[in-house]
Length: 230
Image 1 (cartoon, rainbow, N blue to C red):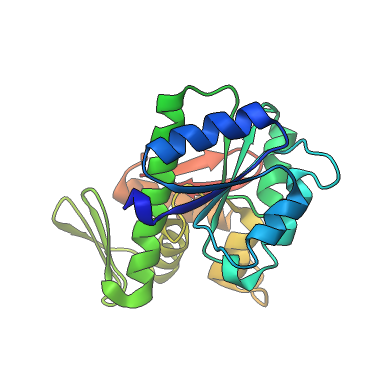
Image 2 (image 1 turned 135 degrees about the horizontal axis):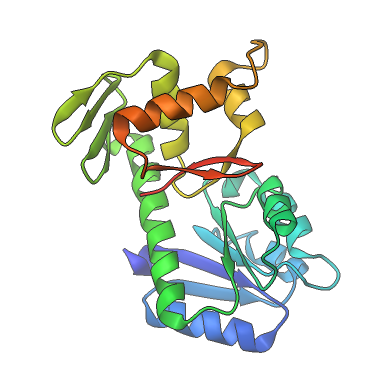
């Protein structure tokens, strides 16, 4: 599958571009690079990547601004955007997620870890996207199987009973494995903007989901939201 996946790497440092592009190309991905946000935007006019890896600190247009701009392009709705950055502060991570990023990778990173991280991101995202396009009505994550047509969840071949909102919440989280969904986004997409619920509503539903499917699948990013990890 790697050769089918197009990856765009954007960084103003030539050595970083060379390091990342070399290792991902060697792993079989179709890679293009850009030294600036403007060049990246030019590339995506006629070459739509499945994964975009961005640096944050870049001249003219930084990674946060570029990410926000990329998220306004309809053709990139399904694209993964991941930040590769030396900045690991919580503020930077939250800002990146607010701009529309799906994840972030902290520099420095060893080649084997870089390839492993990218492989995991692409595999999970690619798997869910292909299912959503109608190739299969079941989403499978190890022993956890979600039947989106029958509204049924099974774990280790045993049917798990979920309330409607629990199922909708789980379905939202698995729609982009690894992406951190912010609390406001969860409330809007699961409960709707017109429905007023208490501050603890999400926490209660997350707790119930963890009780039913196990704690390992749903991770918390304190102060931000939740993500599905497989």
